[in-house]
Length: 83
Image (cartoon, rainbow, N blue to C red; front, side, top):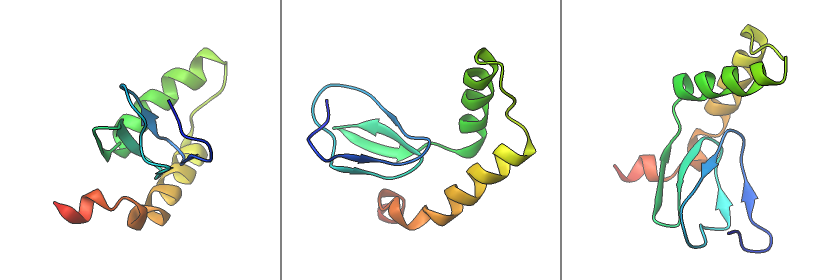
């Protein structure tokens, strides 16, 4: 479930019951009970599988884009700072 106006970043995986926060940073893994970072190796594994089912390659260009977005959005993942 999402509230109206919820923004979800790239590579996020949201699950569970309840309403998560209204801004879900890129590479978030979790839901209303909290989030952790969806690490790049796991993102690549999932992207290869999903894109492969659609006949699309997950190549070094795609991987580079994901890495650039991951690094550019690091400050949005505030729960990392709390650890």
